[in-house]
Image 1 (spheres, rainbow, N blue to C red):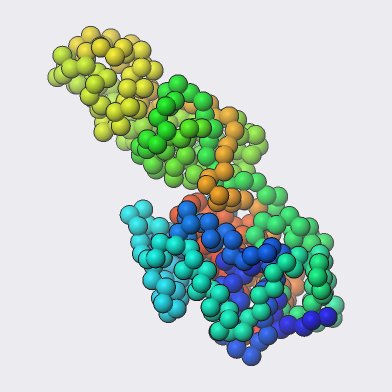
Image 2: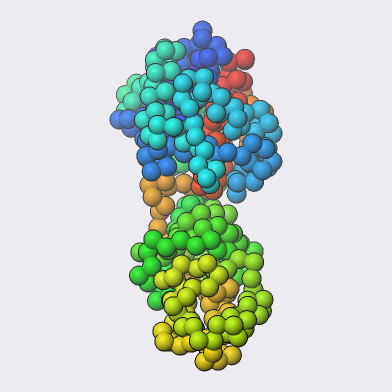
Amino acid sequence: MTHYDVLIVGGGAAGFFTAINIAEFNPELKIAILERGKTVLSKVKISGGGRCNVTHAEFMPKELSQNYPRGQKELLGPFHSFMTGDTIGWFADRNVELKTEEDGRMFPVSNTSETIIDCFLSETKRLNIDILTGYSVNAIDKVDNAWNVKTTKTNFTCEKLVIATGSNPKMWNILQRLGHHLINAVPSLFTFNIKDPRIEGLAGIANFAEVKIPNSGLESEGPLLITHWGLSGPGILKLSAWGARELNKYDYKFPIVVNWVPGFNSDSIMEDLMKIKNNSGKQKVSKYPQFELPKRLWIKICKASEIVEEEVWANVSKKQLEALAIQLTNAEFQVNGKSTFKEEFVTAGGVDLKEIDFKTFRSKKYQDLYFAGEVLNIDAITGGFNFQNAWTGGYIAAKSIAES
């Protein structure tokens, strides 16, 4: 048996951040990170297209919490203790400067995730934290005042145990055996597979739009990106996150309604279309896009409204205008399946949040068991919010462990 004061299971973002902060708060503690894979921080490496979307430039706790379909209420308190500004400061103290992009996402100035990985590895080395790779946990037992952790290589004991394994089914089974309730995992943050002539051949075109799923209450807005397989972009990803459980029940087959011109409905846009018809009678409809729509998208929308390529505005019938109004503001598409967004596979599910004390990120069932990151039933929309959950949980758990 190898003994540590604190064992952290999971060599990802949450695990490293927790370990480093424990050692900072209490340098006397003997700490190890157990990672089942051959390498650590693999998700950090690929996140944000290899640039690592560290956090998001949202500096109000309430507004920040509203980006979490699961965990919104629970994270509000923790965000008052550690959130975006604290994250920026934490990395700045370690000579990692972050920059903000137009959409609010924050990345290292270096534009590479290696900067974050190097920071974590140098900090663990400086603080004498052991990193043990290839150690897959088989069982966890509480014996008297210590934890016994059995792995594929050797067994460990520790006083404090942190689980930061993300959505690892094997670990979820172990936690269930310890009496924790796990919410089943379903995918979150995915794109919609749609085969439809209205978007065929338009891959790469993006447009700000509103999108909703009829009779579900699910809706979002944001840039919609047309892809080879359907629709993606922030507007779709937000919808997939908020609707993760419901869309799973639909088996990812459902209709969506797209409004390509937010702020208009079919009635209000008819007034504008009538004005265009009256003022630009000799102009070819397809040739000059309206409402700042990308030209190729506008041509497809006209075609779907049965307006031929040579048609001029003066000759467009009321029936065609009505069809155009619907295609612009109320276009229905059939979703038939989903695709993973880049490599960033995120799941909704994990340890039931009712079983966690969010002042410490400690288990309500065991005094010396802590959780950080996506092992909890917390997930966010895209944009750096999932990492911010890891930093916040890791920091608060570390403070509690070091002080106790």
